[in-house]
Image (cartoon, rainbow, N blue to C red):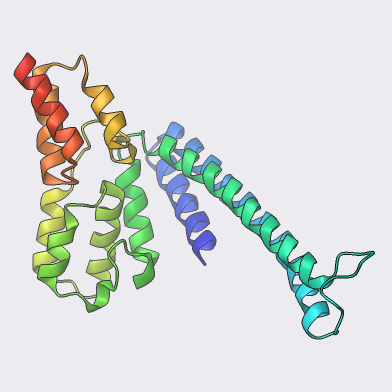
Length: 228
């Protein structure tokens, strides 16, 4: 289900980008979708082999190991490991492509809106979302990226539609200090601060305070400003 949602998301993003004439974003979305489709195809190719091996072991009564051949259970284990490795490689490729796409202004929020509209509760980045009261959700929103804020906004409007949650999401949504900022680690942001002018550093500090509030980033921005 997750892969199908990812494919549908980037399909929608590609069509949206082409509609507004943004060919660069459309190409990136198409590239990411292709990665997701390849991952799904690889998994579908491996899973029948794993299922057959398990069936031979559990139903057919074949021994799990034979001195001369690898038995069904061993094949199942090997097949399972191959599936996991395939998934890891494809997932890494998909994440890399997604990070690249989110460097294009507007892509992160559009991605979140599309995903939120089609999401189930399990897809929302706050555990047990539907069981949380508005105050608990509001307290967690500052930790989320622009992609996830857009996802929550779309999901909330479709379901509980709580005014307090939507107002808080709206107050946090906006342009990142630069496209792709939310994808960076604290160390990557710290390194990027060097050489920026005071205005940019102050903007980054304010954004970080309102969102993830990472100590390393805040301390680095304070140092940059104090040394100016």
